[in-house]
Image (tube, rainbow, N blue to C red; front, side, top):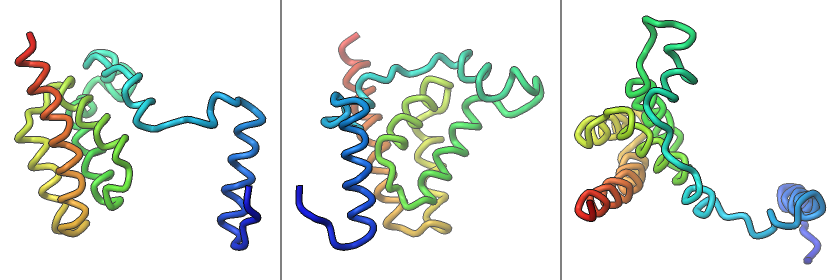
Length: 137
C-alpha cells in the first residue's frame, strides 16, 4: 500500500486496514452487492418500524419514504444505493412511479437540476427493473 500524504487519504487507508483485520471478507465489499442482497421490506413491516407502532395517526410508510427520497435528492443524490433502495421500498409501500418522479422533480428547486437528474436516473433504473419483473410474471 502506498503512503498517503493528505490526512483524509491516511484516515481512509487506516480504516481500510482496520476493516481487513476485523473481517477480511469486507475487503471486497460492494454497495451494489449489498443492494442486491437486501430484500424489499413489506409495507406492514415498514409501518411497524417507521411509524404506525409509535403513533397510529402518524405518517404512513409511503409518505415517510417519499420524504426520505426528497432528502436523499437534496444531499446531491450522492447515495445511489440508498436512493435505489428507497425507491424500491416506496413502490412496495404503495407509491406510484408518478409520485416518486414528482417527489424527485420538486427537489430541483432546492437541490438543483444536476441533483434532481442524478436521483431521477437512479429511480429510473429501479422502475426499469420493476417493469422487467412485471413482464416476467
